[in-house]
Image (cartoon, rainbow, N blue to C red; front, side):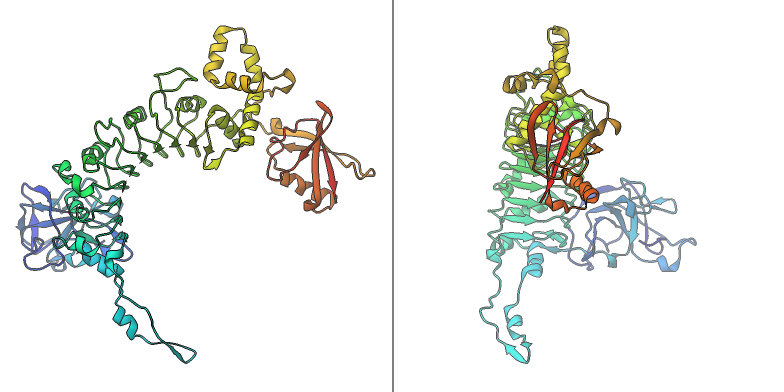
Length: 558
């Protein structure tokens, strides 16, 4: 951006109104930009391919300002006032030398540029032809030689636009639909259309394109600033087959999304990430067929999330990076199912501020929930081990099939639930017979009694006493013995419970000078005399095998 002083044909403000205009493809004598007195205020995007893009708004009713002694001759001429999508790129609020030429939402979101630096874009069909056309005659006229031998082209045909099912026009400066009916004649079979980051400035412009694409099912409109339609229901026919819609980074509020929603009667998948969505209102009479909704990277007012329960068909919900710390379904007691979100199967809560395990117990109230992602939160087990935290998630969510993108196998669930029983068994025994305490324990561990019914009550010798998370408490004293080498003395070592078997073998390799790949491990416990347990996976931890203080690890090699 340049540091601008306005001169010669400078414009001074009077009372002005803001409106959107249809941009033209070139700056000719009839262009409003050159018909003074007018300043064009543009919401511009910059890309590596196309440079400056189109005007979105015009401020009208401005008068000429004569050159003053403060202004330099090099500043003479016409300037365009620019409001940036990214306000960090601007320099001012639309004023110069105390004169307000246009207004910006951000105090540093404005700049002045010369008209020569602005591109006003092309219509849809022109953009398609530029991006997709292959000139068959030009290709056939070229000679290609390899090792002095000339190759002949065969079977080269000009690409047919009619066969295109996907059209990707991201950052391609599309500004309008062009001639009436031309889109329907040129690309009638398009099912997926990407118009992200284009020069379209209103939903009316978008509808003028999609109305001619009768098979359109997926539409990408991210990184656009679109003026809302005055009568959304009038555009239903333009989006009658639309099932998937992306409106990421469009500076939308949830109220505006709901206002537009009548245009999309068949919509099943809506992505509105990184917008200006905070408070969520109930979607009454709209989006009733929606199956997937992504609100990622919006700072949500968390108690309004329950408004989404008015979407009866919702199966997948992405609430990652939305600032959530709590979710509550107060319509039902712990251990029961809520009537809210009856169809919800998948929930993404990554990168939030969840610290309380009762939030997980609330999720257990969702009757259809089988897939959860909860990475980047601060759900911590008493031993501080992330693997233990994952085990607690599995144990608390009895129908969980996928956790953090990984399938929960039956053996994983069995191990997690048995460890959960041991982990809180002492609290359970203390709570038994005391109705008040028992009720409190049940609220904190709603599934515990179900697990007792499934596996049986724990014995005192099996219980894991909860220790505070310190390095000392995480070290296990184990003895390595060598049954096939009577001359070698046993070795006692203190190892972290979270140490994987592969690293244990690495330690033994350094101590014994035996290749790690040749080592075979098992262990015995004084609690189960005469029984030897095989350690068969290098990627599991000592804790996974329930190795405790005083156990012996038997080391053999071939």
